[in-house]
Length: 282
Ligand SMILES: Nc1ncnc2c1ncn2[C@@H]1O[C@H](COP(=O)(O)OP(=O)(O)O)[C@@H](O)[C@H]1O
Ligand SMILES: [Mg+2]
Image (tube, rainbow, N blue to C red):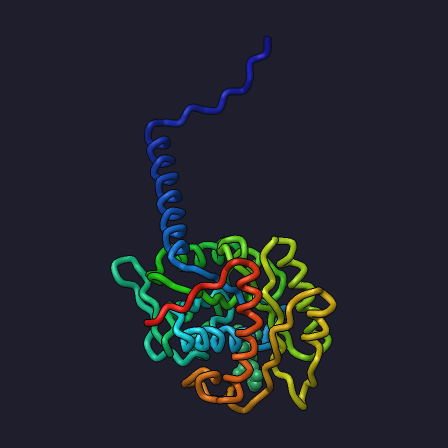
């Protein structure tokens, strides 16, 4: 009879270390579940490539929802280019207090971004896969969001490891996909949508940003038609976006109208996937 290979025995010390590790992981998971359990709806804002206005849409959507009376958090998960704090015009950073991250407040939105924890604002952040996973986990574990109706998440663009990791870590209720009117951007958006669909996450709809004389219009709606998705609306290219003290949706009536339209479509889609919270007056 042949003897089966026996695994080497762990020393008592190793066993204790392993136990501590398991306990730590369990505690981490418990905290994340607890934190996420207090958030009713999590929406990711995503695009096929950078520069199409993903951060702009995430910030304006969050500010719009807060204006509607919802309790809103905004998580900057674009670890490489964390621009959310700047675009929303946060004047005070989030800070760490007794091991917990207290979000910054800007225009009624609770904001957490890697940029708050950078030494210098323009420092490039080069994270490898596992580090991105850790950074996001850290944010999810440590942030004191409290009770939220919506968490809007600004994701990294593209189909690389970074957005994938984040999609797997966060259990999102759905995505809003941002594209520009050019056909190339729409093609990139298509690739991203296919990836999201493979992960079985709901696509709530498509927003076409930067519509106007410069880039034209219509590619977003066409893409939605091609893929059988909801078209949520167009956001025009405007000078209003030059200001960085206030989200444009709070400064311009025309932008507000565009978001009223987007919100109508989004509400319908959220209701379809059973993720539409009731307004909480605060
Ligand atoms: N509708 C718009 N009109 C004018 N400028 C815009 C509009 N949307 C975005 N921008 C500008 O385009 C640039 C890229 O937008 P950003 O939101 O940072 O893109 P992303 O997050 O996809 O990389 C920013 O300077 C932003 O102010
Ligand atoms: Mg961005």
